[in-house]
Structure formats: C-alpha cells, structure tokens
Image (cartoon, rainbow, N blue to C red; front, side, top):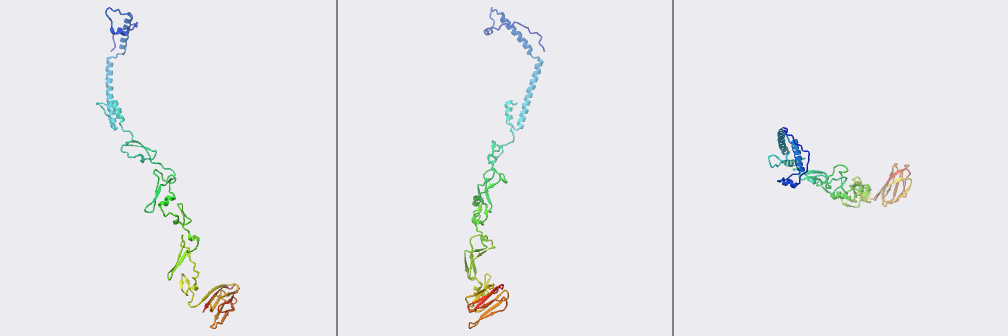
Length: 366
C-alpha cells in the first residue's frame, strides 16, 4: 500500500557538525548552532523522502518472495537435471550436500570423457608412420616409422632353402610398385646370396646382373676345335681331352691322326666308320690324278705285281709284271684313255688327256 503521510521538506542544508560532536552528542546547557540543526533537519527530510521512494509495497514483497522461492527451486531443479546429465555422460559429481554446488557441477562437467575412449588402445609410436599422430591411453602419440621414398638400397640378401632370393629392405614404410616401391640389389649382394653367380659359371658374351661371362664359347670359336691331348684304350675307345669351355653339341673336338687312313687299316676293319683296305702281306697303292693333258712320273715306292688306271670318260690302261720281271703294259685306244710308258717294276710315266676327268690308280705290290 502507499504511504499516507507526506515527507517534510527542509530547504536549508546547514553545516555538518564535526565528528567529535557526533560522537559525544548534545550536553546540558548546549545551545546548538542553527547551521548544525539545519544540517540535521535537511538530512532527515531527504532520508525520509528516499525511504518512501525506495520502499516496496507489502504485496510486492510477497510477490518478490514467491518469485525468489520459484527461482531457488528452479535452480535446485536445474542443478539436479545437470547432475543427472553429467552422470549419463559417464561424468562424476562429488557433492557435499543433497544439492550440488555450481563448483561441484563444473568439476563434474570436466570429468565427462570427450572424444573416443582410448583407454584400451594398444598403438605405440613405433606402430605409426612419422610424423603422423594418434591418441592412446597416455595421450597424443607421434609416429616414428620412417617413410622411405625413391629407389632404396637393400641392406642385405640371402638364399632360401628352395633357392629363392631373400632381400633385406631398410627399416620403414615403402609403398609398392615402380619408383618409390623399388629396392635395388647390388651385384655384390647377389653374389653373396648365390656364390654360383660367377664369371666361370656364365658363358662368354653374356652378362647376368652385372656379372660378365667367363666361360669360353668353344663352338663359336671353331667348328672343329683341336683337343689338348688324346689317348687310346686298345680294343676299346679313343679319347680326346677338350679345352675348357662351352660346346653346344653340334661342333667337334678333333685330334690329328695322320696315320689313320684306309690304306693303313686291315681290309674291312671299321675304325670309327673308316673301312680298312690293307690286304695283309700285300703292298697297295692308290692315288687320284686330274685329266689335264700332262705327264707325271709315278714312283709309289713298291715293287709292282699289277696295276690299273681308269678315268671318268671310260678310258683305261694297265700293267702286269711277270715272274721274270718283264713289264707288260695295256693301253686302250679310246680317245680319252690314259697312257703308260717307260714302265719299270717300281715306276712309270703317266700321260692324261685334257678334259678326261679324274683318273683312279690302283697298284698291287708283291
């Protein structure tokens, strides 16, 4: 309700008494100065006026008290709901009374786990690529695995039991494929893993991973490569020791055997495909001459028993030595026939005609 009495007014402001006078107050027989009384009356009027202006109605107080009670309950309810929400988010509220304080609720909010729960994480710095980061039970983790770029060099090699090559890479991450995924293995590392990777195991003219071939290619050098030495197992086989190197199976290793002729082999004896013509106890002589129109002395170095010569044109001639060493000559009249003259028991002169072909001479000794 409103005030009924009007607030008195006092226009003279007066003078404020000293502090000592305020403390001791009025004494008997004091005659207060007018200025002091004016100060007191003026200040009293102004205080009453302020009191009326700022005082509230009773009804207003009741309303205010009700609203304050509502605010208090709302605050309690809000705190309780906030506490419930904190607990629902796995936070912890430690309160000293039934209703938590704002400080206690603030601590509870800060206890709520944020982000992904990393308490059971097992990754460590050595499991992550550098400089990637992650979070584990102890907080932030920075990877330490080196990231390898470009063509890298192998740190070593070995050979598996099945013969496959094992290559030891550098420690770190390397993506696969051409370029950044390549690992270079040196020739020395390959040879360390495979001792057989050596020049003396590789054909000359070839190179395997930088190792040049050192085996001579004998078949490419000579289709009839001379052997180093030869020997015979009588009645068994003939041996030729080849020079060191590669032979492709289509070329030959040879040994010079000047005496290995048909005339030096007993008749019909087969030595590696060479058929002997020597008749035991008889001396034989065979030769071939061109029909070129020349005369040539024939002196084979044996005593004649008989002989015959013929050519590709059908011409023939021959001789026989009698028991009394008389030499009988037979010369045909065919135009291309050879001609024997000046015969003895060991020699004669042979004349051939031009374009009469090859002449084949067979002489039989005694």
